[in-house]
Image 1 (cartoon, rainbow, N blue to C red):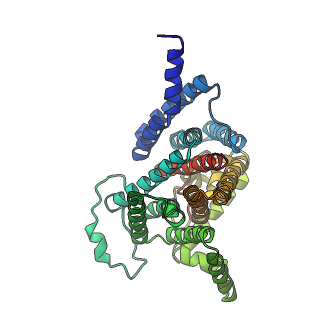
Image 2 (cartoon, one colour):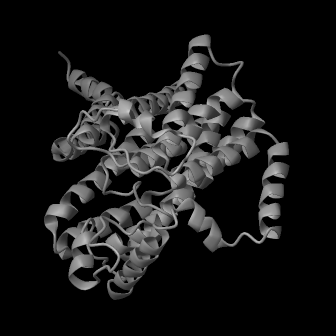
Image 3 (cartoon, rainbow, N blue to C red):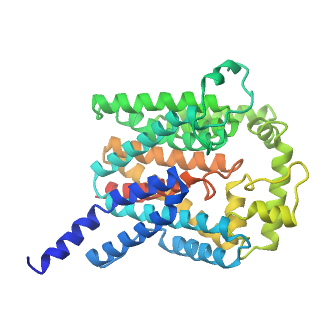
Length: 406
């Protein structure tokens, strides 16, 4: 055995580190008991890459904002009044950052980008298949869905999923699954067409059955963005629809009343006001990730309901958790991701890389979904287990840009 053999092994492990990282990340999504273990494994893999390549991670546009976000999360551990609530969310945020860099490092070829796209499709399929057995169905918002339909769903898990959470993630993944079909139908193999088509239909059906107005509205916006990136005439239809709505006098308040149920809007307005009070009082440090219900109950009690787990607004929740510096850093990562996906889309269209263009377009549409859905809910932030998925989308956008430029 030569002296170079251990280094070769380390280099091989570094190149394939994405697989154990994905495995422990998936385990942390299934159960929070694996979260700390997943963070430790991610840290070890970063050290292995450091030894193998001389750098812990690949450089990206968002390195400085991510560093600030990580520092604010660590500060959150020091100032929180509820470490039991804050620690899991900080761990999940750090794990998401590790996933971001893991995908950015690994996905260096079009084939690997395509493999990630299939991974998002598999995630969407798993969510759709889990829904009938893991969701606590509630509400009768859509009259065309018979109540008897829900009697066939049997909940088999103790830790049930809120329909709004399920709808938020289905809406987020839907453009990523549909985009390859719209942009690269001829390039896809028959089994790929069948897989993407089947999962798209499954996700759409489950999304409707959740009866989540915010999720369906966000998904509709995402699909419109995807259509506008694929066909020029879609711009005309979208602009015409928006113009018609403005002429008809549709105000923002009336739109919100439709996206959020009429009886739920006053509660949303109240909880948003509590988040705004917290932000004013803890503008620099935030209140500590995850401690929103505790701080609300102690200092800003609600009138319409005893307590809520978060502020039901993604941007407000980030600011409340990590302060204004954390919000600025998070928004910087978001906008840099959008810029990366847009540039990757434009370069791929110019060079006739249809499948890569479709994947980049799907990532762009997914950001639109997250922004729209984030106005009414905060389920894509750290309080729910699949929140690391956002960082997976962001890391894929960075990787797609690098591949598009080669």
